[in-house]
Length: 355
Image (cartoon, rainbow, N blue to C red; front, side, top):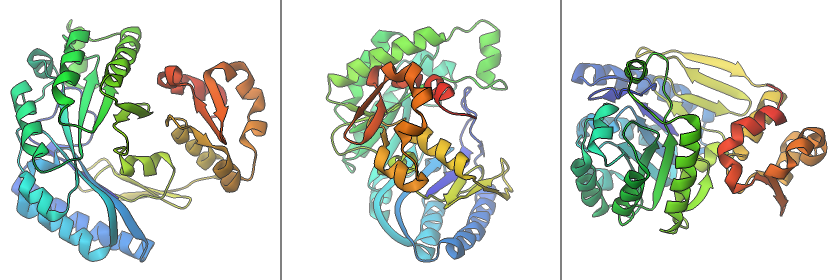
């Protein structure tokens, strides 16, 4: 289960996620909409177990502890929770104490750091600085063993030295790191800044930074398990692995999506959001299964594919695989993209699938 908390103290210049400025009044309206949606899904999934809970945003720690408690209590009261993992995204400098989160049952924290270069942070509109980020890591590491953080590649003023420094500083606190390549939405503030002369990495430079970062993380025993995610052994994100394994999931809040069986539910991009429905065809589900599975370093499980879709993957896609077979490995009932080519998954999917 994912809960989108749409409030932010300030919108980052690159951000394309739905968010609104925090206010107490808006938070109460948001909670009422959430309560209504919880009742809808309670009927849909009956007594099925919820194995992971993830509160993201936005900035979940921009709301008060009282309102956070209301959200969690409503979920606790209406769903059959059997949580293996309970993650909350936080940003340095905002609220929600580690003691409060620990007591409510959170066992994993994901911190949006992005960079430890203050000039880079300022250029993308982050509200924290490098000292705030390190202090946040120190503070939460006293209460949580399972800490994750984000690193963004390709942002202004970033050097390879910055990346090495970032990894060196955070490695003692974290068990997991998500490495994202900068994307610049057309209508973002960052796009207009780039049009005015601000420099960001090119596609080739981004690819080079990605490979460099992967190699730097290996020095600290971080193993890549998905295109953008690296962890120490046994610290992969259980929540995200369920998405990539094409399990059913519930998404609550503005813009959140859900999948139950062959039905997708998508909430509109609006504070007063509505729910839209789509019945997925077998072909659409097959394409999604392939796309998600091939994001993983373990790749696509050939036996599960046959069990779900009633076909031998290697036979069905043999003609399309042949021209690109050098980018794949097949072993132990899995087909996977070779690690050095994972970054090019989208290009390989264009060759493999009919969209």
